[in-house]
Length: 330
Length: 273
Image (cartoon, rainbow over all chains, first blue to last red; front, side, top):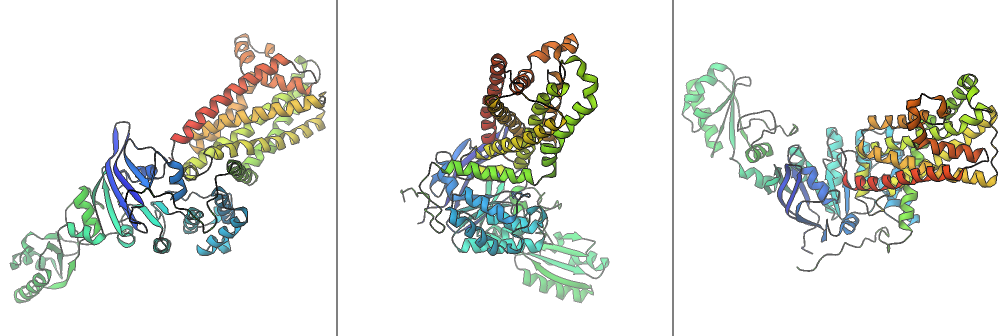
C-alpha cells in the first residue's frame, strides 16, 4: 500500500546537445497532489512526456503504479490520463460526442458509454452545453471538458501539464476545486505549473525543477523556510522621513532596500515585532512621519529566486516587498 | 515492499475487460467516426469534396473542351474525365494532411498516444474516412460527368475494377498526406493539395503527352500519375491495359508501403509542437 504511485530515479534526457533532464528523482504517494514548478525550458514537459510514455528517457527509470514506462508502456497507459498544455478537445464535435469518443477508446462496455459521458457532463457542469459544438465553448468550459475527458477511464494517476495556463482567475479556482476533489477521492495528481500561486495553493508537495534537476522539494511551508526569514517593511509619509530613517539605529535598517516610489524601506529581521516597535518608538521621538508597517513573509517567489538564480518576475535583487504570485515565470 | 503493483483493476465502469481482438477494430471505427464528423462539419472539406471537382470538370469540359478537343481523338470529355477524377481523389485526400497537422498542434495525438489503444488507429481513421469521402465524391462527379455527356463503356467487372483501383489510390494518397500532416504546420499542410492539383497536369491526364514540348516527355511519360490516370481511363473505356494497371499498382503500393512505415515511425516519435 505504501509503494509510491510515481517513482522516478535519475531520469535523463537530451535533445541533441542540450541536456534537458540531468538526473531527476521524484516520488509521489497515492492521492497526493504533486507540483513540478519551474520556468519555461526547465524540463517540465519533457518529464511529463516521459512519464506518459510519449518520449523514451535516455537514462534512469520511471514507474507508474509499479509499471515501468519503457518496459510496460501498455500497463502505464491503462493507469494514467494526460491533460496537456492545450485543451485537446475536438472543436468540430459536441461536448457529449467528445466524451462518448473517449469512452469508446477506453473500451467501456457499449451500454456504459453514454451513461459515463452524462455523469461527467453533470459533474463538470456542462450538461446544458452537451449538444453544442466545442468550437462555441469558452476557455474555462474547454478546460473542464478536457479534464472530464481525462477522467473517462478512472485513471489512478492524472498528469496535468500547465492545466490553468490562459484561464481567468474564476475558472482557475474552479479547476483547483475539481483537482482537490479528485485527490480526496484517491487519484494521484502530478501537475506542472509556472504559477507560484498554483503550486502554493494546490499542491501537497512541490518540487522546483531548474536546469534539469530538482533544486528543492517539500511542502510550500518547508520551501519557504529554506530562504531567509521574515522581512519588515516600513512606509513613510514623505521622502525626508525616509531619508532620515536609516539613522534610527534599528538592526538591519541601515542596509534596508529602498523603494522611493512607495516611500518604503524593507529589511530582513530575525525579530520583526521588536524591530517594528523600535522603528515606531524612535521615529516618533525624531519626528519622522511613518505611514505604515508590515511583516512580509517569504513567498515561493523568493524560494524560486534563491534556488534557480533567475528572477520569477522582473526584479533583480534578492528581497521582495510585494508578493506577486500572479506573475508568470516567463 | 518487493512486490510489484499490478496495474490496478478498475471496475467502477466495467473498464477493464480481457483484451479483445475486436478492440483494435473498435478503435479504428471510433477514429473513423471522428474524421467523418470533421469532414461533414467543415465547409472547407465539403467544398473540396463536392463543389471543387464539379467546378474543375466544368472548366475542362465547357471552357477548355472546345479548344483542346482536336488532339485527343473522339470526345474530349471521355478523355478528360479520368484525369479530373484522379486529380479530385488526390485533392480530396489532401484534406487529411490538415486534419493530422491540427491534431498534432492541439496535442490531440499526444492524448491518443497515452491511451491503451491500437496506436495507428488515429491515422487509419483519417484514411478510412477519406475513402468514404472520396467514394461519395466520385459518385457526384460521375453523375455530373454523365450529365455533361460522358459515356463510359465499362462492364460490371471493369466498374468493380475501377472502384477497387480508386480505393487503392485514395488509401495511398491519404497515407502520403498523413505523413505530410505529421511534419508540417497547419498552414503548410494546406498546400499539400497543390501536389495533386499540379503534378497531374504534367501527365497524360488532360492532354496527350505528345502535344507537350519534348523536354517534358520524359517526366510526363514516367511519372506515376500517367499510369494511374491511364488505368482509370482504360477501365472506364472498357479497354483496360494490364501492363499499365500493373505499373500503376506498383507505384501506388510502393508509395503506400513507404508512407505507412515512415508515418508509423513519425507518429511514434513526434510529440505536440
